[in-house]
Image 1 (spheres, one colour):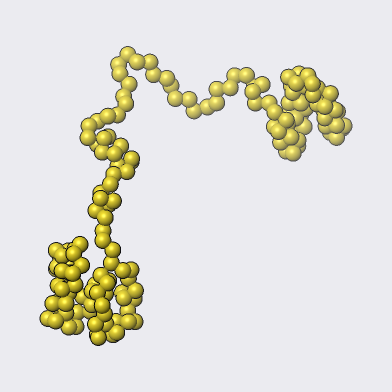
Image 2 (cartoon, rainbow, N blue to C red; image 1 turned 90 degrees about the horizontal axis):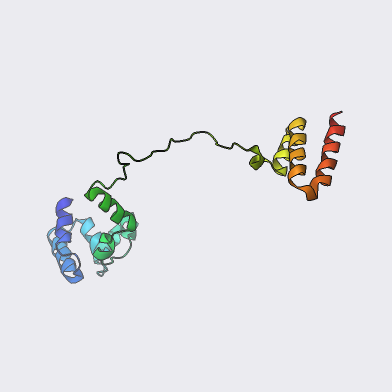
Length: 163
């Protein structure tokens, strides 16, 4: 098979030369159906024995198109970056004497007022955590004076429900 590939590859790009080579090959070896399929793939007219291959799924291959070598060898942005990084060791490393920060694995919220919202209070209500919901509504009434009456009414409804 590799011999056939090299045989075809030497004439690739020139359809007429390739068609002549395949014709010569078929004259020497008339049973070589792969040459008939390749001949049909480059758009050469079918010969009388090609009808035997009509049931083959190899005959349904797409028509021959010239290969754009420039498109195949064009570098993408990722290829350029990879080539740059492989060329030399361009990793970013901290130098001696530089301050390094510790990696934090836990939240660093010291002030819990950032984490207060009506949605969180509603979640607590849905989970049956009425005390936490009341606490959040009280904090929200202190932070939002324009809605304090609304929050006081909600707190009263929750307290009535829990009693």
